[in-house]
Image 1 (cartoon, helix red, strand yellow):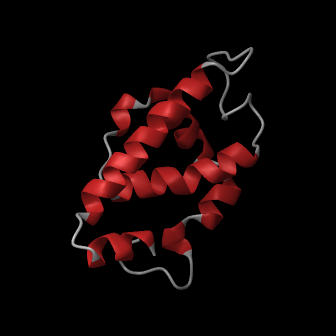
Image 2 (cartoon, helix red, strand yellow; image 1 turned 30 degrees about the vertical axis):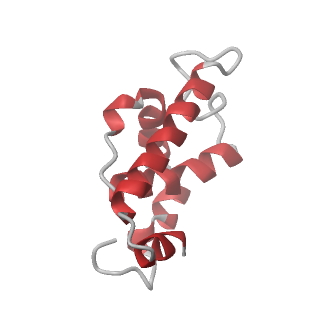
Length: 105
């Protein structure tokens, strides 16, 4: 894994992960804000229907929380993620409910 390789090279895996996620989320937050026709009622990345963007977002937010990224700086990402967490399909797919989930998932 990338984190394993960074650690093997003597790098700070957590600092690298936080920095990388933070940079990506700053870019994504700008993209979400610029979606044409975006309104306060939108609950997903693009409008109010789940798209592939939403499916990809959830595990990224999971990792961001795992590495203690300050999600307060990403209000749109946080709003979308909060909504997605209420949907049954996302609840069933959460890492913590998978049969092989580690105890700290």
